[in-house]
Structure formats: C-alpha cells, structure tokens
Length: 458
Image 1 (cartoon, one colour):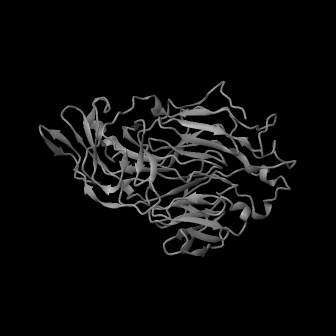
Image 2: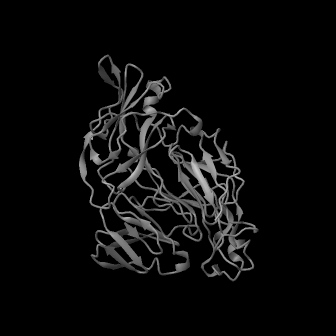
C-alpha cells in the first residue's frame, strides 16, 4: 500500500506500505528511504491531495498540480511526464477523475480521464481576494495512458464548466458524473468574499453519463437533483446498481441558516438498467485467482430474453471495486471485464466460459470486490467476492487455461461461431467480450430521486 503526500493512497499488489512525509519516502517493512522529485514541494497548497493510481506495469502514476510522474517502486526510479494542459485537476481545483474500465480488447491498457478543474493563475491563489470564487471552473477533458505513450490527449469538452464533480463507474460500463459547481474551487473560509463560507458557487444539479466506447457525454432522459452538493459531497455505487448520493459541507463544522448549509439529505440515482429484468447467473465463485482454471456460469433462457443466439455475444463478466470517495477523489475505483466465451445450448440457456483474472495482480489488486454478469447491457445484481488472497502480500500467479471457442451447441456437440478462444480455465460461465463498453445503454428511464422526509441529526 502506498501513501503519497497528504494522506492519499494507492495499493501495491505485492506488499509494502509506503509512508511519505514531504518529501521523504519510507517503505514499510523498512527497506529504504527515497526522495521524491520536486512535484510535491512546489506550490504545496495545490499539491496536498495528489492523484495516485497503480498501473498494470506496477508503477504508480502521480498527478499533482500541473505535473505528473511515474514512480517505479521496485527500482526507486521516477520519470517525469508532460504537464497536464489547460487547467489544474488536483485539489483544490478538483477535477472529476476516473480510471477507465479495463477490457481484454485493448489488452487491459490503463487510461485515466480528467474532466473540469480550474485554471486560476499561480499568483492568484490568494484567499485574501475574491479571485477564487469569481473564476469559472473549466470544461476541458484530458486523458492519458501512462503505461503506453503517456501523451496527454484532449477529448471534447464538458457541456458546462465543473469543479468537484464525482465520477462513479456504473455496472454496465458507463460512468456517472454528478455534483460540483461551476465557479470557484474546493475549500471554505470566513473571508468576506465567500458565499456562506464556500469557496465555490453555481452548484450543478444536472448529472451526465459518459460512454467510454465513443468518448461522449449525454444527459438524455436524466432527471436533475434539487440539492446543492459542493465541497465534501460523495457518491457510492450500491450492489443493486443504484448510486447513493450524499454530503456537501463547505464549513469547518455543522452549519445551517446559510447559503450552502451542512447537507444531511441523501439521494438515490437509478440508472436505466435498474428497472429492467436482471440476469440471475448461476456458478459464480466466491474467490477469484490471478490466472488458473476458467469457470462456467449458467444463464437461463429468461436471462437471455428468449434469444440466446442474439444476446450471447452481448454477454460479459465484470468485476468492480467501488472504492470510496472523499474530496472528489476515488482512486480505489476499478472496473475490469474478464475474458470470456460462450456456448449457446440446445435448451436456450447459455454457458458463459469466464477466465479468472489475468495473471497480473497490478491490474486489480487483492481484496474484496464484486462480480456481475451483463446481458445486452443489463447487469445482474452483484455478488461480493475476494480477489486473490485478499492480503497485501505477493500473490500467486497461475497459468491461464485457454477458453473454448464461442459457439452454438448442435445436438451433443458445439459448433464454433468464432475462432477466438480467450484465456480461461475449467468451470463454466456465460459471456462474450463482443459488446463495446456501454454500447447498448440508453438512459430514457434514468432518474435522480431525492428521498424525502429522511434526515439525520448530530
């Protein structure tokens, strides 16, 4: 486990706890001391909550202020990357950030997306003036694949400027963006230019759905919240696929009778798939290894909507870790599609042959997660599982058993419909990786619902 300056952490698959007290790095059990590059030392007010992710290569990607680096813990080697363009994305500029879903079709390449933030000039970060709250957030979007060419790539801009937005990976592979404001930054204070102590204003009530398959946002069919959610807001994906939304407190303590009071009301966001009949897969394991035998998951004719031949290629198995969100940060979120093939059986059922995790613990570090099956865009209710040993230790990496090819059963034999055997193992599962992430999703039925009459006291 890695702790980067000012409390933030990422997880390393093969042991070690790292403590950093700017700028010293300490690895526990005690092995060596290391000094970070100047990233956490310049402009510390904008680098107190750096963004940190573990990459498939085993390196850590660290973004702080404009700067970024790759940190190779095994060899204590640091590589500076190009500065992020257009705006600062880390706290208190607080862009929405997300580690995009990992999928077999691109060999599980990691890509990180940054949306929004602030472009306040370095010499203007002065809490004695009103520059912070009078400066609009930005709408630009930037992505990077740090294990690849590590070049910054622009995406089309958001429909509005946003700071303190929260990204939540949904079970169908699309991504929810909600909360935040259009002016200012994260933080609070008692200066006379604040709005009820808040460093941000112009709260954004309209959520967005991001489609990784075509890099677009949409809010078609989405209802709006009626609650202002600025600094200290949060959201969390629930096992049934809905999203719990709560928080907002731009104050040092419980504060009411102000523009943006301490918020105790909570909401549930219901994605479109919530109202559909959900698949009920049989044969999911309670623990997955890195490599090893594949599993067979059975899906009924009802699960396939009575059309197994059409829906089997649109079936896949996914593991997801929701992480936890604070200060707009959720580096623990991870979404990984398992490699799979399928057999359409004579009785209209489908057997999804699902590989366990790739033999690389950095892709999805050990500890609890959830697994679900997606059929034609509709996910099952998730099942909690353990990934690897569940401990911070060197993980067993097993040989991957090849998957059988996808096909349709003819009498007592299987007719191959594709020649693509994946990586897998022994038991049975239903799914194919033919469906692009979020490709079949439509959000005409989605709604953001405030739960009325519920409040909490302290």
